[in-house]
Image 1 (cartoon, helix red, strand yellow):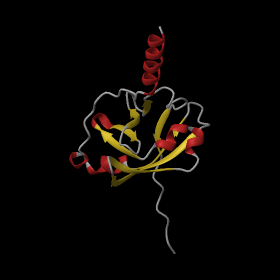
Image 2 (cartoon, rainbow, N blue to C red; image 1 turned 90 degrees about the vertical axis):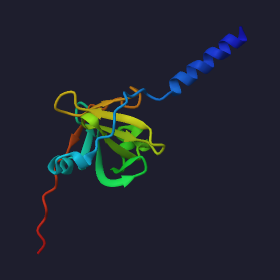
Image 3 (cartoon, rainbow, N blue to C red; image 1 turned 60 degrees about the vertical axis):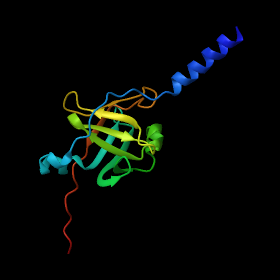
Image 4 (cartoon, helix red, strand yellow; image 1 turned 30 degrees about the horizontal axis):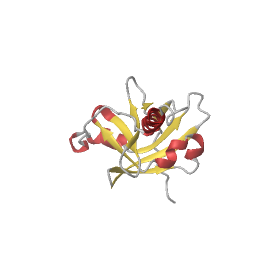
Length: 145
């Protein structure tokens, strides 16, 4: 009886620690994408909750990093969305899906566009409160005098 209880506990903990099972998608070859579309992919984004009260600013860089591309996560993002403390990079995949990845290059959050906006997919506990990833307008160039 003790073995059965122990096995159930081990399986229960192993199941809760297992990674979210994302559908396999191929990386998007950005060299084959229209340069205007490619340019629009990079830049500032914001993860928001439904009410727009919780926000996290990101910059998706075109600079390569291990397992993907470099990302800048604004200070304090982990207060709004704790999972953001684990984000170390990003990738763009077929269908224009955007994966946010951890230092081990594992996908933590996937944003897909089933309609006209990016919505989060992943472990419900990790993406709790997230409603969308929104591209921010590019800052206009300032004139130097």
